[in-house]
Image: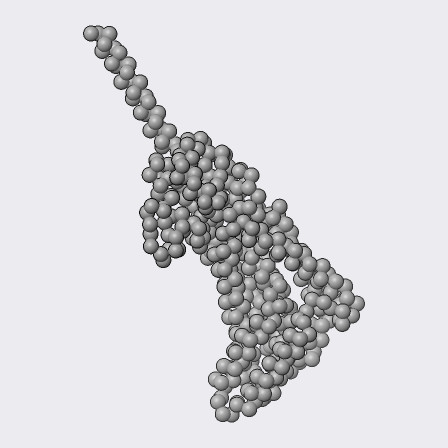
Length: 398
């Protein structure tokens, strides 16, 4: 009887140890899941096949399925905070994922990772994820920021401001402004001329800002959905800015030698001609309607003119802009929009200054000559900027 009690006690201890060990392992089962709020596939994985506005289907919530299996799911939105984005990069480095292949949704489990939606669903449905979650995750080292890695901090912010300012002294934008100001001969009142010029510049600002926001939103929604598309975008920007670097270096050489006829990086001739026709028609209309409709009508026509020319000038002024938009999209959502806003503020500052100077002194010709004389410096600065962007995307791809 005494021996029986001993056996029962030993058995109870063994059973308790088994249960305890099982619970410890269950508690240790952990996976790390990275997503984006704008990622449609990520929303599908939590039961919203038609996006957040669609109906929720619990049977298609794969994150909940893992939690129901006893797995702890650590969820991070890489666009929600700098810390989440740094953590995402650290896991990519630890698991040997190149920058060009880094995308969401992705799950890190044990010594493996899955960044294809169908693969994620399969390993959850067949319990593979449960078995792998018992293995420890790889060690990671979080590095905040880094050279050519992002635009966080004061240095990155200054790069964006500098790019906007440089784009603002782009000969394409300034030439259209000077032509516009020179044609405003319907009044001698300088205050009205300044008001109309600022209206024109404000239209450019709003138009470019909306174009940038729209492009950024498009890239955020779709560029990370497929690895091929993301790679194509990065390669396209890298090749484009590398070509523009060489083109601006060529323009720097020819303008340095005062051979302006050989400048390559400028608006196509037919676009320049079309823009001049638009400006003449608008200014003629303003001259004819000034006495009938007043300054409000003049400003309205000016605003429409600014919106129209912003689209036609995008071929030239949009070169730097597109590269910057595709660069800032890797930042947090709110910060990326703030960077674009800052870029566009800097973009219009040179135009405002030139408009005021030209109107106050009626120095259209002298202002044009000043820009022409310093065009080689503008071209060189453009080349340096494009080289920096090319280096940035080189590190992002390789």
